[in-house]
Image (cartoon, rainbow, N blue to C red):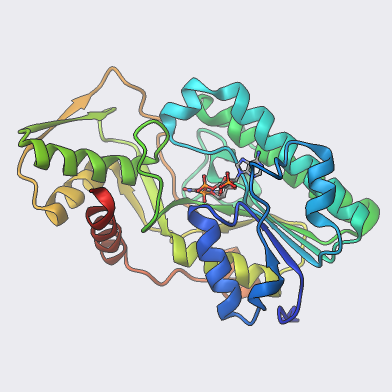
Amino acid sequence: MEKLTLKDKRIVVTGGAGFLGKQVIAQLCQAGATRDKITVPRSPDCDLRVWENCQRAVDQQDIIIHLAAHVGGIGLNREKPAQLYYDNLMMGTQLIHAAYEAGVEKFVCVGTICAYPKFTPVPFKEEDLWNGYPEETNAPYGVAKKALLVQLQAYRQEYGFNGIYLLPVNLYGPEDNFDPGSSHVIPALIRKVHEAQVRGDKQIPVWGDGSPTREFLYSKDGARGIVMSTQFYNDSEPVNLGTGYEISIRYLINLIRELMEYEGEIVWETDKLNGQPRRCLDTERAKQAFGFTAQVDFREGLKNTIAWYRQHAA
Ligand SMILES: NC(=O)c1ccc[n+]([C@@H]2O[C@H](COP(=O)([O-])OP(=O)(O)OC[C@H]3O[C@@H](n4cnc5c(N)ncnc54)[C@H](OP(=O)(O)O)[C@@H]3O)[C@@H](O)[C@H]2O)c1
């Protein structure tokens, strides 16, 4: 595998101040990147939905790692499908085009497991990405992001532009978004349990019936995978980033209860949406193509996440 040396490269990490972005910057530095050559365009003064800001962000840069996104859990996807579609499509499409025009050496685009069809055979293989429509709740977000894969493949074919596309599974870890209006399932459940403990509640309501399965990748592992692909992967085919470890939401909440020592009961709100029935990735391509396998044990990762939240909850 030919290696892209990161030292002295001018690297833009869009969304670099976010949950995953901070970890990506740490992993870039660990892999040899020069910290003061890494820039992070922030949304208040560089809104990437605006073409001129995309041009400015990529000017004189070698590598773009595109993480910026309007992203959230099932609640946000239900409330703001139009914004999620427009924001994610406009940011990505314009940034890719600006990067191509500016002669950027490599573009790393971070997609999402929400791009997969609702009923994908488990484990999800990259070649099944187009075999059906995504789960309806997160389709606007998933389809907007999936369009960027097509764009990168077309730009590689026509212009020889080196863009790669990754499909990370649900991420979790310290510094996640714990805001109940937009958080994903793990931070949402940790916060619910914590607040129930503080109030002394004997019951917790949880969306759905607990049957859907999910896979979770520790954010530091996800960031490591992104940096390894930046260094070693140069192909048009998308690549899953995950652990290959599938668990049900029911198992997840019971593990969180155990780790947080909460003895109350779970009340399943079966009138609320379950979301996609099963999610678990085939992780072979990442292993073969650039040697990535996840390292952090789920229980350990969850303990760290809970400890971080408890420390910061006040
Ligand atoms: N979290 C997950 O479970 C997960 C799973 C799979 C894939 N992903 C992907 O991973 C990436 C990072 O996700 P995350 O969880 O780290 O999200 P996050 O913490 O919400 O970070 C997203 C970042 O995007 C930036 N951003 C949003 N709108 C912008 C705009 N209009 N212009 C410029 N920047 C903008 C924000 O920058 P400011 O701070 O400057 O506002 C923010 O720091 C996303 O592409 C997401 O789709 C995440």
